[in-house]
Structure formats: C-alpha cells, structure tokens
Image 1 (cartoon, rainbow, N blue to C red):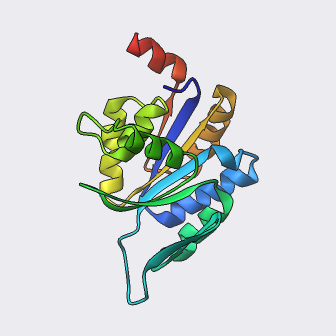
Image 2 (tube, rainbow, N blue to C red; image 1 turned 180 degrees about the vertical axis):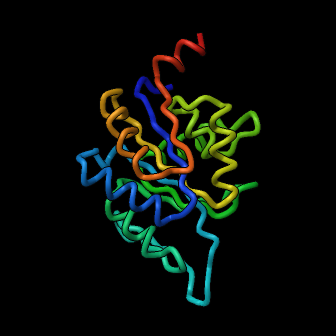
Amino acid sequence: MSDLDAVVAVYATHVEAEEAVKELQHRGIDMRTLSIVGKDTHTDERAVGYYNTGDRMKSWGKTGAFWGGLWGMLFGSAFFVLPGIGPLLVAGPLVAWIVGALESAAVVGGLSAVGAGLVGIGIPRDSVVRYELAIKTDQYLLVVHDAAIQVAKAREIISATRPVNVTLHSAELTGAAAR
C-alpha cells in the first residue's frame, strides 16, 4: 500500500474531466501524479481504433481528441477490456498499478483490475466500489496521487472544477484504519 495521499474526482463528461486536467496543469500540479480512467464506448459514425507507437498511444472515435490530448500530457497509457466494465482507457501512473494487480493476480474480492489498482494506492475498498460504479456508468475518474501537501492543493483546484464528487484519501488515515 502507498504512503502517499490521493484525491479522486468523478466527472460526468470527458469535457469536464479534460478541463480539470488542464486547470491542474496550469496551476502547477505535476502531471506525472495524475491519472484518468474512463470508458470509450461511445462511437458515432466515424472509425474507432487505438494504436501505440513507441511511447505514444492514439485513439479515434467520438472521444479520440480527448484521449489523444491526455496521452500527450500524462505519463503512461493503456487500453483494457475488463469483465463487468468493458473497454476502458487509462492514462497516467495508475496504469502501472493496474498492470501490477493483473500480473500478481491481486484482483480479488469482487474488484476489477482498476479496483485492485486503486486499492494498491491506498483507496479504501468501499470507495473503490463507488468508483467502479462511476466508470461503469460512463463517468470519468481523475486521480492525483502524491505527497499530502500537493494532493491538498490538487483537491482545492479540483473542487472548483465542478466534479460530481471529490474525495481525499489520506495515507495516514487509511493506514490507521488497516491496523
């Protein structure tokens, strides 16, 4: 489990999530600490596809510009098809936590690989269940995982961007609850 804090915000649309990421970047939050998770199932009459070349991933479809922009700002990107959730796009360091959960078979207790990745960074299971439901209902998660002072700053910025909800997860409190 991580000793860093996290703030998780849920956004109803990719536009709102993207505006929040841009505001965090503008206000000096380290982009290496941000992750975003969402489904990309809304296809219109255009081609849909994903590809990865070197350290770049590209997406086409209704939200292709959104994901393409995020993959240019955030570090790490992945496309997963998860049972119970479906096609899922992830950008940022949460990718490594999800892959770690998949590789170590840490996906237990009814949680998806995303849920196991969130638990890995210190998010309590009851919150993870809410976040998985948000993803399943086509909402977007924005996660900042960093030292307490940076996460507090990010939470303040995020709160002003009109998320559906925003929750601070303190490593100190999570660790105390686990003991």
